[in-house]
Image (tube, rainbow, N blue to C red; front, top):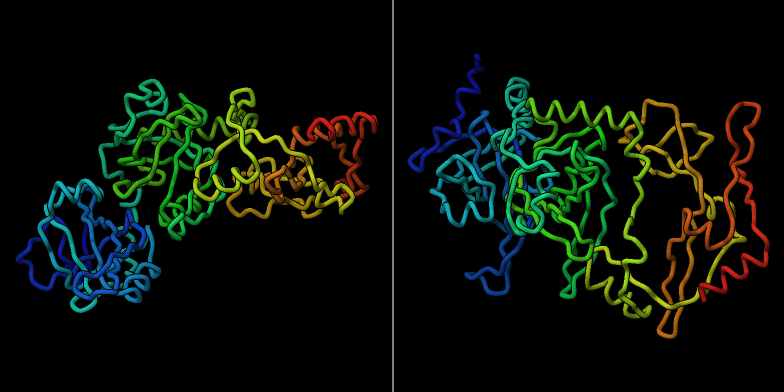
Length: 435
């Protein structure tokens, strides 16, 4: 391939060496970590800030980059680009990496070196040259590991706890992406967590957990059932609460979206076929923990405390009564319609889903309608406000079911929904049973 004169000014990652003077490196970002801070040993009372990313400039070569500096410099740089951007690094320090330390906490790279960027000596900018982008962007779809070196989800499940705490590669399709959950730890640090459900031709649902903001931002751009991932160096663990294996994105992980490989192409075809058949939609319901398997009992105050201290999803039993149930509010706050494809709330009059990432965006709108209530639950220790009561659980609790109103002459359903109530005495009995 012929390169422009500007491209020839760049030093290839494969040619970098500590003796290289004033190197100029270009690459596409394939991985990035969150900003972290540490007490500055030289300046007592001040913190140093750092983050890192990994760039690639050819199918076989990529390198880790570390940046250090003050709050404004580091956070400013981190917010200026993300995974998938092409960057130009001017005059970084080429340092020999410590394989033991580097490969433990950073993505494993074929280079013997790493790049250090400082505010005083280096510059970093976004590459906008068309020729550069055409050369680098296709590298985003090439896994950093052998495309045949991966576990299927069935392999992970079959091996079970023997894989606990190991780091492996995974090839899987995205089934669904949950909403991120935000929390504050006991020492005041803010965090976030997002869970992705993966599937392949051997397992219909497998959890992938993301804790870093950068990983979450990447995952949120993906289209469920239309995206295949090659996940390099995911950490495998056993979730004793859910009694299943899980994968977690960590500082070593590189996620390759829609890999340009034979194996990924076959899985993509399978995912598309299964998605179109509607099989995945049939059991796409959150919180599938069997009720009879839940044994932990909590008071309301204990539930509040556990939710603050533990960002993980948990289940339990509480002996409480419903202290607030607004059935006489507007219908739109009691009964909601959601897109059958992505579960976003929709207005049927619009006849389209507002979720730009909805996998059924170019298809006629299909909706599911049901109770979606907020209730308060109270015991002798306090009140849990705005608890969700929806779906078939709400129908059984209230002794009601939802009947959509007839279509109007235009063929569109109206917003008014009819509720077929059971015998009032039965409803009262059901409510008393909860108390």
